Length: 624
Image (cartoon, rainbow, N blue to C red; front, side, top):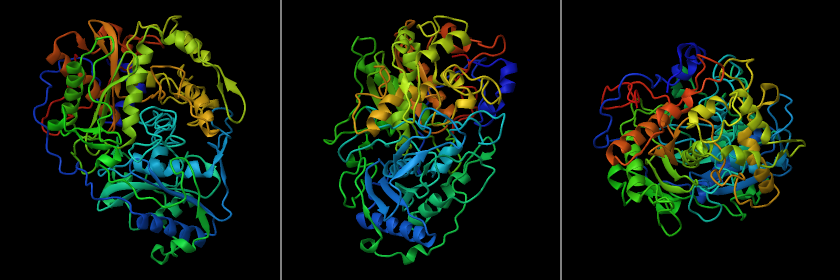
């Protein structure tokens, strides 16, 4: 599971930025946690929500700032689970935006023309979905953690820790909801990396987000050495006045490997938000959009209540402070069930989820304040078909991790399956909205050449999310600018976060169908990954007596923490079940592959050092 020294040196930030150590060598000892550690900052308050008056105030304050700056804007407000509560377009504001990374890239979503309403919604939902009561992240924060280098603009640094997360919570997926009040709901363009999206808070609880489009662009912050103000962000800041994130938890108070994250570039306002005009007198009108069919200001759902779609479990995970997804009848959408082929029973799924949750209930968070707070995560287990066998989360986990945990599980399942290569070869080419196309088969041939193996995706290898991430970056080894791309990526000369390789190309035709008003059955033509691929760490396949039977995915609070909860949780479950279910046999794990020759092994998982808040255990994944 470890890198050999030469590649470890090349990938220094992968271990340094997230305070991780390699998982190889030594012995794990007894890593089964006892009772959950108490977490006073991890609860949810179901009394806090955005009222229609709150929404009108947020919009009016934003419009006042836009007027003070002589700009025209489209403004969206959502609640924490993606219900869009208002979309307001100022009179004369552009009804479209253009997607661009400013690099002249041709392909993917680059140069596509999209409705302004969808861009504003995506920014609002991103601000809400990436945030919690322990961290407040903006769309600028998102931009910082999804690009080819971390920080963006700093060459010869590995990719952002959430590389690829932008293509999650898509409207073509099966986890996020398209109708009804219960969430989580989709974001029409996935997660946004363009400045102008901020979370909204009441009484210290995140209750939603605001998104602003005022420049006709859907883009990103590609140079973090430049602290120039952004018009979209300034308008959003004004809108969030009175609903701003607590100062102690904004992204700029959270670091990764000594690098503090970015929340906003400037907090200077041209208006006094308290002097905003009455909502009824604002120059513009409410407009219908995705997740917002009406033209009336709506009330948000109280997060943690049954109406939000996320509530405390009353079943198998209640004693572990687990939370579940519920439908409009308050019924658990994903209670533990058996695999259709009998390879995993209800008791197996329950044990795997419980053990992973127990690990999380002792794990030190990476992206939360105060320090030494418990990690907050989402956990999904799927069977060999990609069907969800069970889901559980902790109370205050960011909402984005719900879909992402399923994406991770399904992605590692798919690539570990004997039919993966043949399925990829049968997929149609991705057709780009602004012109051009790319065959999915090109990624298969690139992988075959990269590994010098014509049967690379035929079930011989157990692929983890981290290993797949290694080969999905525009540079291999990751962070060595000028290196050739990984085979599931594109060369950097034709790469951007809007054109990132296989991940987007598999989704692209479905996304285009959605933008044209259609409703595709899934994001991909691959039955095992209906909500699309995910390409950052936190998922491993599940084997039973050497045979692939499913996968577990974890997302929410640091990629090494996600790795540990999935890998160690599954190992602990194996020790309890003693029926052959557990992690992949070491001999077939992806870290046995060295595509660049000796010293270039892939990573399988990478767990943090001193990971727990209540013990001084180290190297807990070693030797497993």
